Amino acid sequence: MKRRTILTITALMVSGATLFAQSMSDGLLFSENNYSGTARTMAMGNAFTALGGDLGSVGINPAGSAVASYSQLVITPGLNVSNSFSSAFTGSSYGFGDRRSSTDCGAALPNVGVTIAFDTHRNTGLKRFTFGFITNETQNYFESSIASGVNNATTLCGSFASGATGLLYDDITGQGAYEGNWVNDWGYVLANNAGAISCLSDSKLDYVGATQGCNAIEGGYEYYNLGSLDQVFGRERRGAKRDMVLNFGFDFSDIVYFGFNLGVTELRYKYDQYLRETPADGEQENFAITFDGGKPTYFDSMRHNYYYDADGAGIYAKAGIIVTPNNWLRIGAAVQTPTGIQIDEYWGQSAETSFRNSIYNASDKTPESENSYTLRTPFLANVGVAANFLSCLLVSADYEITDYKTMKFKAPRRIDDEVFDEVNADIKNYMGVSHNLRAGIEYKPFNMLAVRAGYNFLTCPEKETDVFSASPRYIKAYTHSASFGLGFNSNGMFFADAAVRYMKQTTEYVTPYQYYMLDEEGNVLVNEDVPVPTIEFGRNLWTVALTLGLRF
Image (cartoon, rainbow, N blue to C red; front, side, top):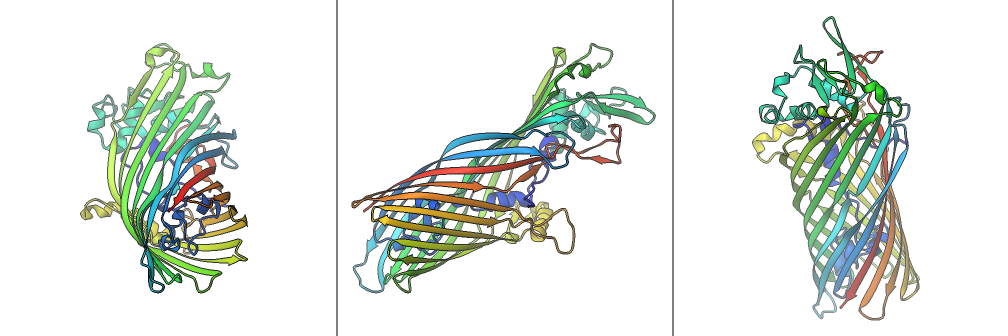
């Protein structure tokens, strides 16, 4: 199965202006919904467009609040457990061959809410209306991943050196170089200040990595790797996207339920990564580099760190309806407007290089960069149907469609929108429609006990971006999730629900540093691309949730 790919992290490692340049994949990252909700809605796969009655359903269909004839207060604490694995890209001979796995866990709060029901004391017409405030998590970015392996073909230091070639040494030296350079050269300033690269003094335009050797040849230099390197690449994501909604619901004759949400989408996203390279076992003596007639340096390690933080908020509206033509069938539908999310982002880099000859040790960090822009998220719509059998079995199914072609990046000032022309063109050409199928079942063997299960299937809206044909195909990348839960309903005000959800997310392919040019002997040239390590990352996310609620 083909899986979703992400752009290489080349820019993250060696440039600043394009360090986290917006891409259509970024738009998808901040727009896509994977609903959490209460333990009940989670256990039933969030197939609640036609059901309602639960505060976890209000973000899916605003009419859901009107179904309940009582007021509610709920809180849903949870726990996320992320299990990630990594391995080399199939057929790669450039390192990262070890399969690694990592597990991380953290607390969450998928849902909090309250609704107040007002009875009009009428038998027909508007029998009841509700007012409430609910917050539901719609995306979770929790992940911790690591990859490692031995690489004898390319190095991060060599990638920095190749990219810096042509930059005058005097312009990328010292802290003042950050102010004197374009931001997109900051990665090379960092590499030079941190000792990852060194200038060849007779040119001041050519550089060699701390893991490389070189020989002068006619017209330039030939470069070679001093030996094999142990490379470790790690990344960590934190944060979540959630909707906070002001909800209004209306019950007409217990047949038609209508609801409206005025919502605020809030996102917090934190990303950290590092790449470390050290001489492989038994090859330490190969890295006895000598500069300017001095003592051998004996390269020991180089580590590069990068962080990126994004905060965003935007307003949207959503309207929904549920119709109950008889006492066993329910039909629902909802539509949501696009959200204009104002995103403020911050990023920076640091690096350190150490040698057994410690006089060459160095470290540095770049100034923090920042940017602001607006992302218009897609229009979405969902429909659902539910049926009640024998008063003890409930079955529901939803279909949600999201048109990601309608995403758009905008600059803070409209006059600057041309900076997003390319990415907005990519969105139109290579984004499409995502389909989300949800199904749930609830069985009540006793009035006080409910057993639930659910399933989600989400398609990827991205098309092939590396096949420039007249009819690019959609990437066959799917997100699957399965869930199970129990519910307890007392004879009084209190109720409680528990759920466990397993989500298998699509695999990503990551290139951790920039391609650079080598010939068949490993010498740097300007006319031949050689791939660098490509890492396959997969993630499975387990979520455990407990909802505690009161009806009054």
